[in-house]
Image (cartoon, rainbow, N blue to C red; front, side, top):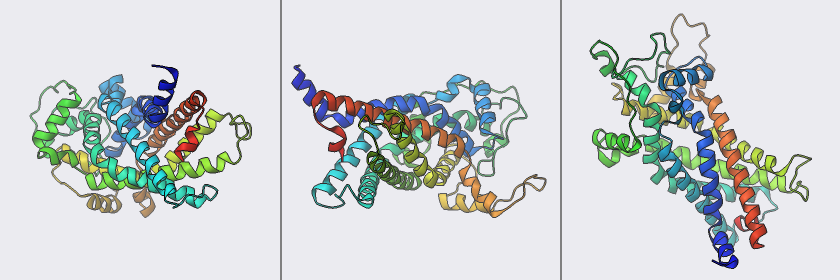
Length: 361
């Protein structure tokens, strides 16, 4: 291919190239934190560090990357598609004269939110089954322990929370030496869901919560990022730095800030989704909807000998269990994503002579 043909290919598929590459790198870098986050959401550990040590002790280093293969492919595809829908929605709005004034933060924020919400609604329908398989893979060791299929590593390990007590299967399990845990592949996990959870519809366990999280979260994420970059771009120097801060670090902080802000709002929804899915997948004797689990967590009292005072605020904060490691994951994942996207966009702009960022709106 000639240089002109390569340049045209890069320009035509600039979103796929930049977002796809960024997604691959950020998914691998942040996946261990996502695995710890899923555990913290369904089981009580004294701290993030104690949870990480438990994962390493019980499952080894592979426990942090359990189920990474399918997300590596699907998340990259989903994020690339999400960026494409977001960009195309904004272009449609701007071309029709709606929210097209880039000098107004309101227009920038609302157009970004519209693109993000549209992307969230469409993408969630296709991503829900893959995320369910990811959650099952991340929690399969914990689920096997709760079902009595294997013995827990160490008899003094963390106790299950009120949202995830051991299932009736564990109570009736035969006593004897614990079975050795054997991890399954993503395809085996998907086949298990299909067989035992009602066929295709089983892949949509907790889908209303998934849809709510993705629609609201993606809208806030892109709206926040566009607003932050709009303010930043008005103050950057000719070399891309902001008050002496190098351009790549500005990109990283802009992306990570948007990710953390959106995650703070939708995190309780994600926690409820993970718990609803884990209860169903582990055959928990008491199945709850998202709303029922929400009210249960707010009303459940701590043990009588608890050293912590029971307050409404403390019970509400149960909805943010595991937030610390999740915020760290968002900081790394979204910071890397936008740093790589903007770096690759600059390279494409230099090569083709066209402004990728301006074309993105």
